[in-house]
Image 1 (tube, each protein chain N blue to C red):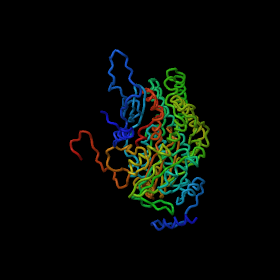
Image 2: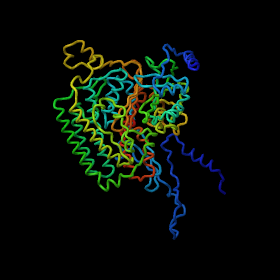
Image 3: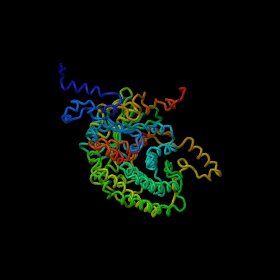
Image 4: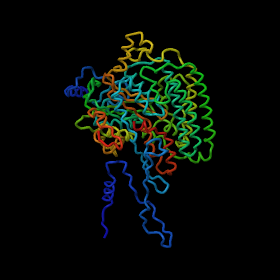
Length: 437
Length: 192
């Protein structure tokens, strides 16, 4: 005797079984849709208990997950039926930490979020603080910031080229990508003193002026990167294996991107030319010439090509920065906001006091709230900052583009092959430090 | 107009002093929201249009923005806990509560932004979810739930996203001190 139940009851039971405190466990094996074909001879059992779909966990520690992303996939042989990102493995409470740091210290904290493009984080934080203070930074600082974030965009996209190549199987690409990125980092070290986590863009301007001979080195760097990027193009773009692995894989449409809050190269790869640098210009992007790159099909190949082209656009902007860099101050000369020069501290009591006050207490920011958004290499990075009139923020929230972009895994990955899932994750270019913060 | 006055009086009655006159929206989208949802307050915050709405209509405002104002993207959803504020920033006419839930919208078509904020009380921390309107708010609302314990009614799977599933408390609340949980090391013989 079999129990007769309505379909609804059965469905409800299934739903309750699935419901656990961990949303991540929702994926349950389910029988394959098509019937088992019995090949004759009675060799195969009629109902094979193993003939279910398989749940597989990729990550959190897997070379192709760019850190500690965990993907839960339900597989029907090689086909991905469902895919779900599970995040939080790199959560270190940076937004909580930010509430205990002064605005002077804040940049040190935010720079560690998107560790592949630290200067973008510093910039958006500094711009938010300056917006609350209603300040404008001197033109030289603006141009320096623009040059630095374009350099970091180059570095981030070179990193993408390296890891994307490795994920798809072009392992030599990894070495080439790192090679050019190293040059960019070396140049950033020369300017900021650090290869990563620079803490160079600060509220009120930048930390130091450009060193002597920065123009020649910048132009040399541009040439090196240009040569490298052209090499990648020659190596990959017409490579039949590469094209086979990337064209038509991980498709996403503009509408899917918009409704899922997906920004940056993924949105542009669908043919929607939206770039905050052009659409809502900040810094001095009005005064430089560059093009917004966009794709047509929204597949992995388009995203690879788009980032490659953006490297060339960034080179263009850096060259214009070298040419047009205005003279003047690299930061605001406001004693309450920026520290005095080191030499002044030995001579002037007042400078010493200002220096001491600034690094112990920080400066006070009037009560208010603001949201500032800029275009980071991964998309719209935003900073929502709330102040209550003290020297520490009430709330600092960073809208990490990778965090939202991860929501594109679902439409892109469903129905793809396992091997393509790796290519898809790679083409999103998530930085887990920014996702988990 | 009568409605507006009544609301203003009500707010005063609820303990919030409306010292200055209520701001007149100089932004067309904000004006449309204020007109459509009476009781909303406009505020220009450092050049950006902000509308403070009632939390009951939080999702309705999103639907209105998406369907009638061509707002194509909900860029960000986040929250703030104002428990320990020194100076509380709020425009006149807004009855402040402990939490604020903030949604940033962007219209690619019209190239403009608007920020919608609603007040959420500590007694009943819940807001209508934006996820049915803008699926992109999914992760962000889970994050707010995780960190502030604010419930988004209508969210398809409101679970913790960044903290472990068995975590106790909501870390970004102001009454949750940092370093409440001691640092533990694997193999450490003595709990500290």
